[in-house]
Image (cartoon, rainbow, N blue to C red; front, top):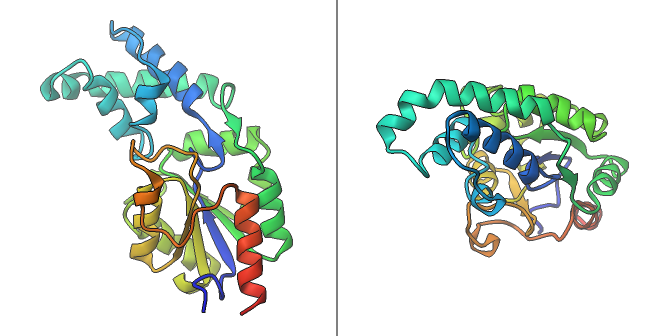
Length: 230
């Protein structure tokens, strides 16, 4: 019996799963660093730090140069600068991964209900989804500051299941990192992972999931095959 057999909804991550947003982060974080008198950093450095929310990201980026006390002293100013820079370019440098829209459309066509759950602040998430034409697919969207706790805590997954009125076993989470997998596992959801995102510098093959799918379109096909044969 497949873990996907009873699936009726999917919870999908944003950064690293639907969109390659590292180029946006790169512009915004280097804008922030310039204001604080720090030199630019690379996209490769940033890719290792994203996925755990903005506060973690800003602290990690400042921590490349400063000790913890100095990071905390500058944190509020840095956070405001980062948010200002990010909102001014949000989506302009980011691109859709292959077959994202096709995959979402296929899931909807197969009768799945969809939620987007991300650790990105909701004020960044909503305009980004709209800008990329993805907002049409989702019944509900939760950002990293929409709820008291963010992934890898199970609360966002549990909240999405509650919104759907479905048991966690009827919901699959699709993401690119251990954050997504841990949150889904703790909530009791099935997990599929994509291999192309930002998994904190770890191999996705070391992440506990029910399968690795090359694209969201492949995920849609896999879910459909399992649910129709159950």
